[in-house]
Amino acid sequence: MSIDLIIYLLGGLTIGSALMVIISKHPVRSVLYLILTFFLISANYIMLNAQFVAIVNIIVYAGAIMVLFLFVLMLLNLSKENEPKTSLLVKVSALISGSLLLLVLLAVFKDASFLSIENEVSNPNHGLVQNLGKLLFTKYVLPFEVSSILFIAAMVGAVLLAKRDKNIIE
Amino acid sequence: MTNSSYSDYFPILIQAGVALGFVLAVLWVTHFLGPRLKSKVKNSNWECGIESDGNARFPVSIRYFMAAILFVLFDVEVIFFYPYAVNFKELELEGLYAVILFVAFFLTGFFYVLKKGALEWEK
Amino acid sequence: MILEKLILATIIFGISLFIAMYATYLERKVAAWLQDRVGPDRAGPYGLLQPLADGAKMFLKEDFIPTNADKWLFIMGPGIAMFTALMTSAIIPWGTDLVLFGRTIALQVADFNIGILYIMGVLSIGVYGIMIGGWASNNKYSLFGAIRASSQMISYELAMGITVITIVMMTGSLSLRDITNAQHGMNWNVFYQPLAFIVFLICSLAELNRAPFDMAECESELIGGYHTEYGSMKLGFYLFAEYISMFISSAIISILFFGGYNFPGMDAFSGNVLAILGVAALFMKIVFFIFVIMWIRWTLPRFRYDQLMHLGWKSLIPISLINMLITGLVIAFKNGWFNS
Image 1 (cartoon, chains in turn yellow, red, brown):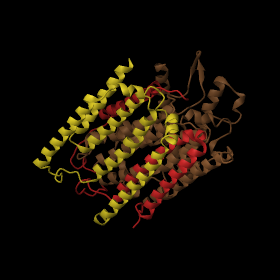
Image 2 (cartoon, chains in turn orange, cyan, green):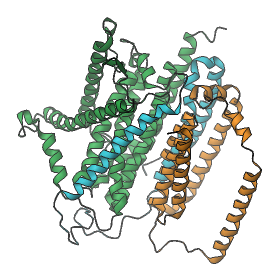
Image 3 (cartoon, chains in turn blue, red, brown):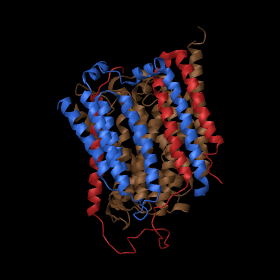
Image 4 (spheres, chains in turn blue, purple, red):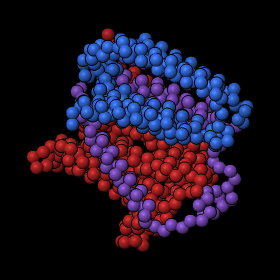
């Protein structure tokens, strides 16, 4: 089996399961398809030899963020009666904004050149943990530290939101 | 191991195949073994023998959500330590200072969360 | 090559199942011993056939699905639990290379350089088996069991991740084989990182949902917890997955802190003899830790849920972070980075 075939197969599967996320009616199933999609994306990363990104994708997205999604979906009231009704206006505006985004994406892809990407991955070992760590802690050490401030901001946000709702729940 | 390629990961597929095969085979086989009796009462949920009231789709305490949200944030921060730990001995002091600063930010956030009582479970 | 890996994967799968089966027997015998009882002794000599009898019983029970459960998710839950439990054994180095019929066979299904992260990844996926099963049952007790279990597992994953980092800092590699080889002979990590070992052991117990952290299935509050509605082999999968995870966790504790297949005086041997002795040493350590986990279960009472969360978040995370910083500083001093 050639590598190209594997990559096309994986890409097709990824797009297929991503479509299932949108198509399936049941929200919990959508999330499960999304988890599957993350796994397939990780497989794609491995084919690109970006192993650290692949496993972090599984740990953080499939293992942490999707747990949060499932928590929210499973523990909120999801019975048929109190499903929010979407009005026609919302549907139309969603359609318009969606098609606008599609237009923008199409325009971007039309002008994108794929040659520049090949130059970037000329070193096949770029995605290994060792090389990634070296880059992260020498060249990109400032963004790394700034990201920790971003985390504090996120924590403050989460805590404040939870505090506001506390009276309602208890 | 400095060199590595995707072919290292094929054994994982094999392992997954063996595991998945076992799981599906056993679930399929047990479906046909064993007795099968159906009745309305028997097929309802068992909740201590009391007739169940409504279904189990209800909101729960926000603390569980808090734990999940904070887990996502801290998990990403913990992940950042791995590339550092691998290169720890080569980066020497520069890397150590960078990580100490990062841990300081981590702990700032952590103690803020504790101080605000987001992780208080009794009350 | 592929055939070789397939055979190895199947053998390890068989061994995992065998150990998990006899761990159920051992659990009952240990419980009996600690409580001054006899334990199972009817099926076969010393009750040794008891696990087989239990397994056959599981197979022959009714495959029950409650009416108002989500059918497919209800079936998927135990399937995912079992699948994730079986996936972790892939990267465990069971011994040094074995030479058979002129071929060198690595006693490890897959060796890649993010080994320990792979374990963390599979661990984080393990939550879904419990969560999906508990929710799909549409039973209030199952739901609470599932929420408790998943909340607890994600909370302890953090401290576990940080303790693993201290080990990686000492070794400089994420590959489990490199970590094992760095502990040659008696040079085990536990002597340098006793605190990390204790934190890791506590976290493993919490990840396994074992006593004293088995709030997810505490019978006094939640009937059977997340698997209240399950029967037949689906229940069997949940119980079995727990014992397989116990086996794998013991293996990981042995590898990270107790030298894996290394044993004192190993330099006197070489080749296949060393490989076989190494496997034996690793399995002795594994059985010892399985026993320790059982010993803890039958000794300590169950924690309360708020105590559990406080221990995980407020004690273990700061302790392991500080341990990590101290490790970094000590190594920095030892290597003389501060002198220049």
